[in-house]
Image 1 (cartoon, each protein chain N blue to C red):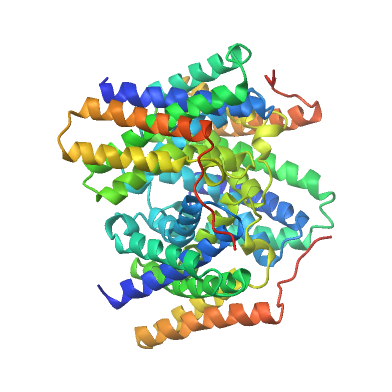
Image 2: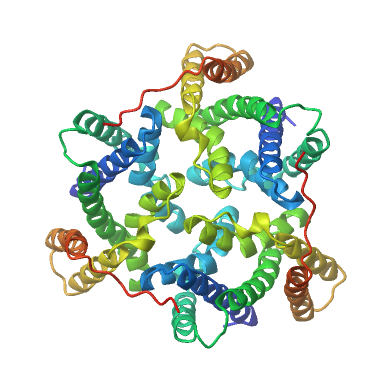
Length: 201
Length: 201
Length: 201
């Protein structure tokens, strides 16, 4: 198992916990909680793999993903009262998953030789699409469209990763730095209620 | 045409009828009824084929699927008053489709050499994803998350299939037995209002 | 760049504008507008490419698609007051995209040697699926199921294209004619409130 895998599993765990807390909040049953945690955690990476035609899909060949999700769900259920206000914890874990998956998606795009714009898009798709499926399945308008700076944090982090990569900054430094950048931009944006402009007539 | 194909077409018909009854109930027009019947019937199998990268997608190379769906829709429209309460019939056909597609998906997973956990997941995806698309397109919260034992019936049937397959029970006996098991667990669960626990604080 | 590409980019622009106007109307922020314009424009073609297993997905290898969408979104935002009632413009651009993408999808199906029924389906999927994703992400019941003749216009145009193609009518004449046919059927259907029958008991 490489550093890359561990990083990917950490993102999976963060999104699985955020998905599980979301589903608990929606009063879903045990199975519903697992499914929502699962699609939140693997949805973005699966769409990315299908779009760039890489098979087998990661979670189908490496069972560590399913184990990670299972443990995350159990922890989320057991600790749901201890981890404080559900919505605040959900938000924090979602931000962590967002940061990790943005950079992983961007890196995979670079490895496949795509244009920088496509690499940023792949980072964003990997990071946000799981949440989009989670929201759509729960019959909610996806978070990505209506709240504070969300995908924009991905774009900022992914673009910085590509620039630093071009400047030959060491990979693990670059990964750590830009992942944190996505998380921090997201946290600050929510804290200070930063928003992008709307254009309704 | 093999037994496998006939079985697959039977599942397609069952889900197409359940989708058509659902759409009739939603007061959709003739085309909407066909589309909902179509996605309900082929949605799960299509996602499975994309995930395991098997091409061509079955319904694109074998027109019997489209013919089966078309005939099922026409029958559902013609007999909608005779087949009694729409919601009860819908529920029955949905359970039949659930049983057949669970076992087909599980078998295809085994044929492709996936780990048992992935085979069970593929069975569940094949059986439930069409209904998830149907519900999402109709702007409803998917049935799978809120009602009585649903995907759990798939898990029980798929796991039993794998165990009996390992014990070298003859395939057709195994298929028949476990398909019926999924259907019966689902029917009994609804009859006695079995539910999985929720964990809302 | 071939005539085919230009045609495809024209459809992309039409759907991107319709998606952007839709999102402006929903009071989304700048990023949300871009994402909705993007999925409306490329969603149908992406699903088609995944279903028939053609890689790389067009918009990932040819950046002109992303540039076209970006320019369309900027134009839609800048001109949103000048292009008159949002809903009427949205409707017109949607009809243009519908016409172009129906014929493109149908042609690609023919090139891959699929049966005529599948070619018509691919035309319809290419033309309508972007709008279905747009509506689903925006938490609305998809337009395709509830309004006047919509996908039916695609079926009429796609079928005519296949017949004329069989009769060896020159390709560009056929394309132009059948694309216009889809657009006109759609416009007339809305103007005169044509509807397909429903079958609610």
